[in-house]
Length: 260
Image (tube, rainbow, N blue to C red; front, side, top):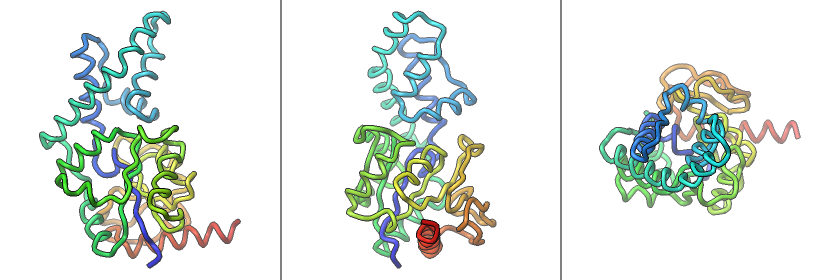
């Protein structure tokens, strides 16, 4: 097997975290005396903006306020985001967020086979630590050869920076790896880094465009025929394992070499 590493996104890919994130944002706004309250439809639109601070800034920019008031709100973003992060961690620690089907199984399969694991995410290190610690135990943080978070790169997804840094830290080429994502922005980032990418959307991202994905599945333990999202996405499989990931990886790069 030439597959050497799996690089996972975090929010939406490892766990369907967005409801907990949205609730934590709203709790932080209320605690700060703000009347802002994002409903599910609004938050789904805001997810097109990657990064929590950036999401708040985008929302402030959309408000019908004078520039001085917007500037005062923007000055509060670091404090609001820090409080939101704390509240999200509390929700995760309280068991409100679980890993998506097949994630823990694929981690185990990769570790047993000597395939390395990495994370490339726009979220904060605190959010990653909270999720991994709550769902897999704090010792699981040592499973990852690279953990690139949003604070470690100049540009967040859909820019490829997080994936390029993960590849650098792994010391591997894109063709040695497969990325796993849940969103169109994540897919664009991974493909811009040259990575074969599998997408497992959530309800928050299901309507997005996943053109160019090697495979689109409901989740990693999808028991039906996968939706064909590209040239390699035709195989029926009861669950996504290393053997299929290797076939996808090989087909992706054979296709690219043939069309180069």
